[in-house]
Amino acid sequence: MTLEARNLVAGYGDKSILEKVSFNLADGEILAFFGHNGAGKSTTLKAVLGLLPAKEGQILLDGERIEHLTVSARLKRGLRLLPEGKGVFPDLNVQDSIEIVSQSNRDPNGAKISADDVYDLLPVLRDRRKTIAGEMSGGQQQMLAFGLALLGSPKCVLLEEPSVGLQPDLVEELFGKMSDICKKLSISAILVEHKIASAMKIADHVMIINSGKLVFNGSKAEAEQINLWNYF
Ligand SMILES: Nc1ncnc2c1ncn2[C@@H]1O[C@H](COP(=O)(O)OP(=O)(O)OP(=O)(O)O)[C@@H](O)[C@H]1O
Ligand SMILES: [Mg+2]
Image (cartoon, rainbow, N blue to C red; front, side, top):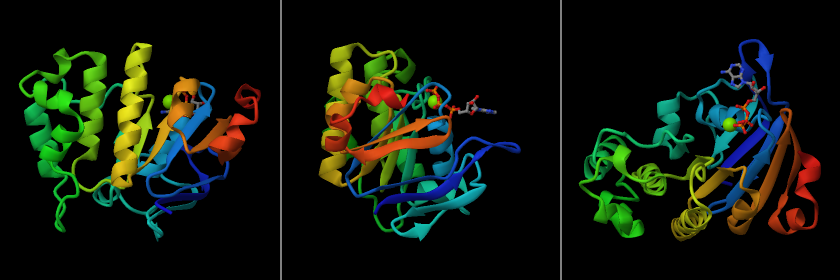
């Protein structure tokens, strides 16, 4: 398993939001993560990355406990977060953004994904090398944010509503790219989304959270047998 959470409890201050959340994710798998506004999706991602402490429970990456590690130590081990609408440096051009992140994501054992690899995987970024990130369209910015998350040696990317603000055909294109790249490079992903039908197209597993409790956790085939909205 790439990423595993066991009975994870996390929240803000004294208040717990997540109630013993458990899930696991194999290499190259995409886990679609749904739930109502305020259900606890972002809280889960923050706890996995270490932006919030785990009050209880365990988080494992490649079988090793990481819940006691700092955010930067978790990034070094290959966790990546693509925060909603905040994944690029708005004042830097594409090339400089990629350069800076690839420097900071250097892997002493040799990076799995270089700047050139990112340009090959996402050719739109090569065409836009000199464009200031903040001046690109929403779709192009999401491609850049995803490209930046791939630099170095990522194992698991946490994607927070990457479709926000994108027209429907661009959502399909972005998700298609994300899925192809994850499968090709065996990177696993948690995809937090409100655009359920689009996310279902690339999901291997589905998880639904309701008021901090996981109310559904199953394969895509199992999720297709039920009415997902009953769990919201
Ligand atoms: N910084 C914070 N301080 C205190 N409570 C918070 C904070 N952030 C979120 N919460 C609370 O935690 C709960 C879960 O919020 P969370 O952001 O995880 O929801 P979400 O599932 O990501 O929702 P959305 O789909 O709207 O992004 C909500 O009740 C919210 O009010
Ligand atoms: Mg959220």
